Image (cartoon, rainbow, N blue to C red; front, top):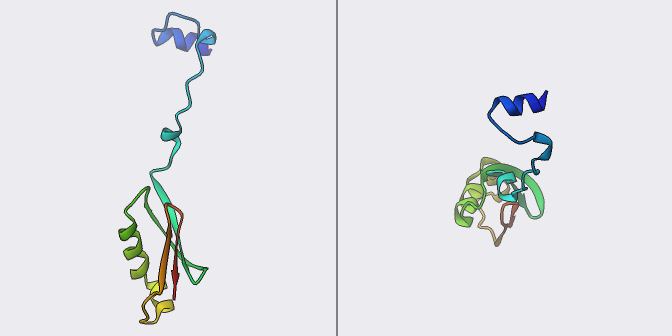
Amino acid sequence: ICEEMWEKIGQKKLLALQPWPDFDPDLAKEETVIIVVQVNGKMRDKFEAERDFPEDKIKQKALKSRRIQKYLENREPKKVIYIKNKLINIVV
């Protein structure tokens, strides 16, 4: 059946003799990633962001989250650790 369909779309050579397509890892990558937000090493929130989104924008989004605000309790974070396309850890 596949050979017949291959011929109907205008291909001259046998389908069985065609090479396998090459794998391109860039095409397999997702356009968005899930960023896990931790406070003092414990997961408190997560959100979706574009792959390779700027670090400062990720930090802003994490710090403005309602779920994270209750753990900060109007305190300034001592340190913010960002692992690209994976997680952000806010140390209070």
